Length: 455
Image 1: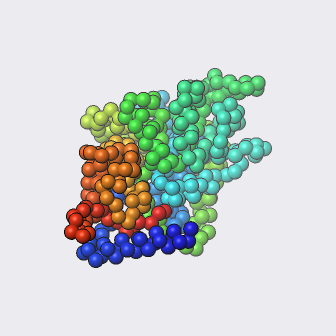
Image 2 (image 1 turned 180 degrees about the vertical axis):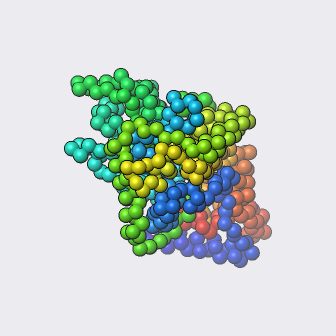
Image 3 (image 1 turned 90 degrees about the vertical axis):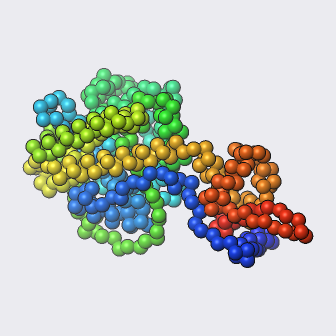
């Protein structure tokens, strides 16, 4: 085994030397996903002051994880803690439209991008005890069946947070024809309305006035692609995926960090969440409204959404139709995260918190477009991804015939083989060279030195 390793490394070294001797210079290859839309960078203006500090601090502490990850985790946890204790009436006159601030958040990223540690940032701020001091149940749950969840919600009427390390399994289960009742339950639980007021399970016959559930989880891009493609093909278009509204797909550039814990900041944020728990315990569907200035701005924003929906494709139109409610939810969450006095909480939401909410909705729209672009990537992009992942098998140098013999998907003799070589050349993963051993001309391809060693 040691001899094979030495031989492999020697060939790699020879390949790199040959590239230099031939006058070949290598640049960083173009990533297969480099054509995806860019998303805005988060800034402190997206949050109340103390929360902003904690979002960026937590991300830096986790080896400079994406701030979008820690932000979504914290916002979703706050939404779950507020739950049914507060609602917002976004319209000035129609008081019947009241929105419960449930949030479904998704962190999209490859492995080793700090998704799992980021997921726990928000839930760790929540109390481990129920609002009922005698209840041993927690507000954050991971795995549950529908009957068990209904029992739980009968005790926690303001709702809970379901946290999945991977959303794939949950989404897959809900795709099953046997899970349509469960799927319908979650659709209603997102709204926090009375759609399941008569639902009874088990011998105890629990009845829910309203099911209220916030959800937080992570998912890999490759695993979310089938669900997105299903939406593109018109399947599963009941709005389940669109409910994962804070679904972020940021750029990741993990750096090693080692910073001293800021215990003062950590305690400040814990105190904010403790106040939310106090508010939760003493309120039930307390109604919040916009100030006059915020109301005017919200009305203008709704008109903007209306015009945007008219000019959008159906897939985006379905998402935009839910953005007015999302904007109102976020404004309410930011308002409550800013309060210092739990006994005298103003019932009027100012424009500053609405502005934060609008920024967030615009950001989530860009992330959704990025996800859909990822799902719509051409076959050539998928082919390139496959080829890049298997380049070490061709290293350090290969011929067209060798590649053709691999019989990889999408790579056969003829046009598809030529296309595969062209793709790898265009993106900088291989270089074509012409050799003349003993006067015979033959074409070979050098593999980029960074891809000569197996992962």
